[in-house]
Image (cartoon, rainbow, N blue to C red; front, side, top):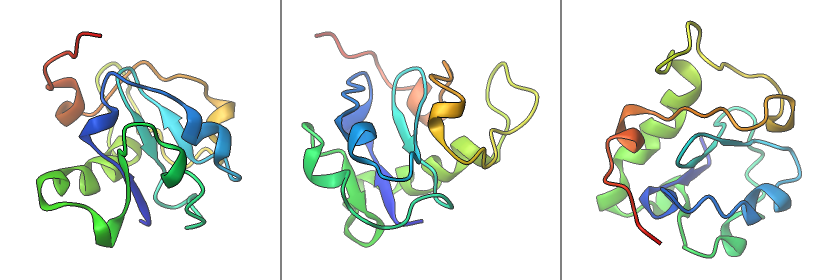
Length: 114
């Protein structure tokens, strides 16, 4: 995995990073975005456009956000609530659109009020 989206993205879903991603590897859950670890090409285009500074290169991920490293991978590797199968590697987020589901880590976060 190269880049990771952490807690600051929850309930924000700005999507500027999605627009910048040249390989369409940023998928939309219900409350957060997730970078596919096998589809990301480490270009870093997503990081500077994130308005809430939620995207980090894995080696630069703050200790307080370390749980999001495995959590981003889990979004694709494990069946999530309401899904019988894992998302896997579909080869691009546009093929699936918003998925309306999150990992337990993200789903368990208190809702942010705008």
